[in-house]
Image (cartoon, rainbow, N blue to C red; front, top):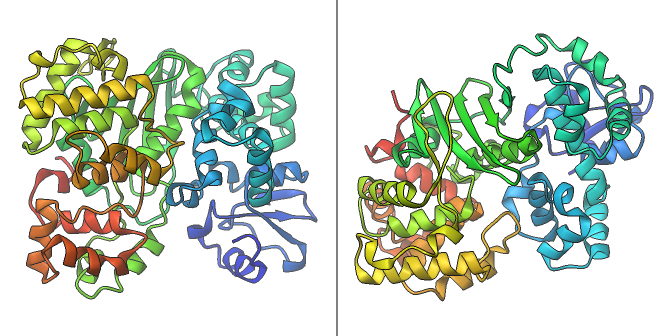
Length: 490
């Protein structure tokens, strides 16, 4: 979008928050860059320059606006909408792969050469993987500086910087303030860290956001010991690259309140990225709902409760296992099966607030499970053991780097994997916004009530007009039922 100068100027002059994250506005007379909705008086069009990423602005010599804080914008919805090389690379960078494995590790995961990855990112985003990762480190550093009393040296390494000097130089360059000055400007520095590793922050999103099905689904399917709904917040354990964490997420009118307890602060950026992905916070609800409203039978559902998101996951392998456990059984039965696995094979953790006890078992731990100990039909045992074995061996790879068509094709070769299982994994684990479930009983029942075709083939043909947002149409169709997944817990 940043190449459409006229459209970008209109967005800046109208201070349209829908475009935050889509592009960034740099002002040549002040040397700063802003989000489109920056509240200051809009600069003259001839002084505006538009960039596709904060990293590109920084590389061009601009510093972040202290008023609108463009580094805290919602992410571009493109990276959750697409499955090409650039989108997969951006998801991996957000997951901290460049910081942990370097650019060669990023390229290896994507199956391309380092030069090809750098070339494509530079062409589309105006910055290479190192610059994009550096911008992300700067954002993580700012969060830690403003929300914790940690010493600056600890913050530097927790944010992913290799040295304190690099940390100081980056913060000064990006924010035009020293780390100490940045902390002094914070409203209440250090008040949110009650215990070591505990952080409180805000996760922004594009309005509107309907929390009912989002948090309702997560709470209704919560696995005891791993997830819970408590005091208006969804809480769960997180398996992270350097350790583990516990997150509490509470819906607010203009943000999601996030409280993180991490065993290693180096996992901060990854934890935030995974929570945003689970709650689908980078979606563009206006574009999605406008497309779905073109169907006169869907339009009343969208108008009644706009801004529905797709409830996703923080762990793709975990969700795939739970999808198999949930085949042809009730939500309660699926939770029971999962809770037994967690108790027997999950890794125990300490929860300062009580209630959460385990991390969901990793595929390597589940690969050693005795099939005879599983209280399920023999054919589903075979499905389960085949899946966890291939996940543990790396034959099936589920993650932000997944190629959606290839992963779908691979899953369909596994015993017991039909279209419903593959599509629900594509929708909620891989993040495919166009995944569709025409054979789902709830979808067929909703279609019949609304006057839509109820047979899978006819419904799929009708749903072609909803593309590329059929996964969101699924949420609206499910919402016609009185199942607990559709309601925010009391």
